[in-house]
Length: 381
Ligand code: PLP
Image 1 (cartoon, rainbow, N blue to C red):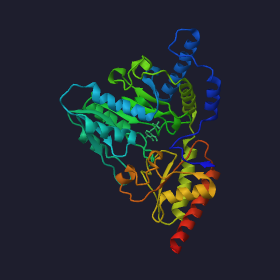
Image 2: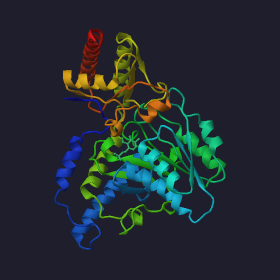
Image 3: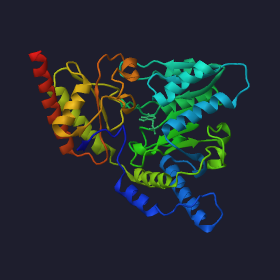
Image 4: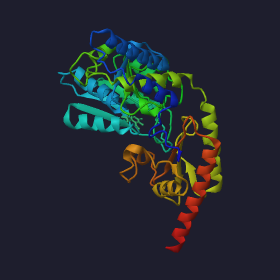
């Protein structure tokens, strides 16, 4: 198996597996008073420190959650409810290429609560015009939520510029960024970004699934989504998911040391060049001047991405996707493709830390075979 779908999820790294093995017997509830529990609590705080260092903040700015979806929901929910009761509708600004964990949530609030949403358009490369963000700000705006990196195209967005300008216009407006696809693939610094909230997810950077994080600049700006115990400064009730938290701490420590982004970018760029040269009608989608190092979204004029994914898997045991994993069951075009005006399903190749030149060569060969098979099938129709 050659795995090239790291934007969907990553495997556990060796050091994360080791960390989980070493922590299996620490089962005590971190809120209990005996010394064994204190040791569990202490290990959670070491993990918190590691996550904080990864994004350049203090440990008490980090809340552990169940996943990025929960972190995003918590921020959005907080903004709507914190300010109630208030007769004025709350206004928020998002982009049309956010993950469904943001877009579906704001649609829900728009439908059932006193909320209005500006969903910013993107151009054919998936770029946001930052002036559109500033022009959309109005008296009732409470939150701007723009992702740092798009999961399908790999586009990086100008969150720092957006955040600094929005805060200059009105310091009370909160800025959130979903950094799920950025962590472990680029340096992320919350102070530089000047954001109020940042979402991250363990399983995108070699930790297990079911553990996420939320950076909260000022805990007073966040209303909890889960009510109950006093865990996570009272901002996320529920007994801590100890094993996953320490695993994410280990993954964060590793991600902080990782710097080999250029190797991944070189592999990706060379692969794209070959595809464009040898497969007629192929195009690289997205903002090629401003993309995360590991993502390649390719459109084939003559072939459907789903067919290609199936063939490369069948021919060579290679795992790639036809867009975001969350929508892969729904075989229609994703909202991101619709937003950039693409009418055909592309493929998404997402490289990981362990991807080699050989993996990319094998993918290229499999792509050539797959397109030849599809071409001859088309001819015999
Ligand atoms: N946000 C982005 C940008 C994502 O790519 C994903 C998952 O692909 C999510 C949020 C949801 O992550 P999780 O599975 O941790 O809820």
